[in-house]
Length: 96
Image (cartoon, rainbow, N blue to C red):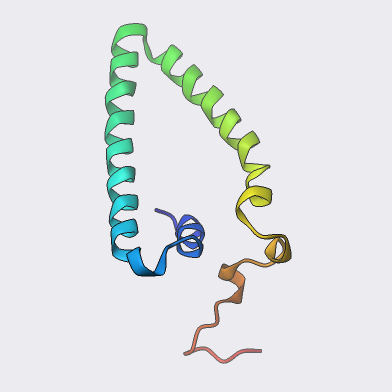
């Protein structure tokens, strides 16, 4: 999972069940990637790559539109302008 995705997951983890939730996250991503590859190969074999790329393009556009509304759903109102990624300070490097 990309680091930004991990920031969203860390924010919503249950402290008492962290290891279970991390393993569930990893397993879900692995199963999803496997099923996506299987479904993509079936669509490409049955209908051709033009149909497959059309479906992927439509899904990408839908995902981009959904991402416009995600900060309002996931992030609390007070932290919309600042994420944990920008709050991180590296202990080795001096801060300007």
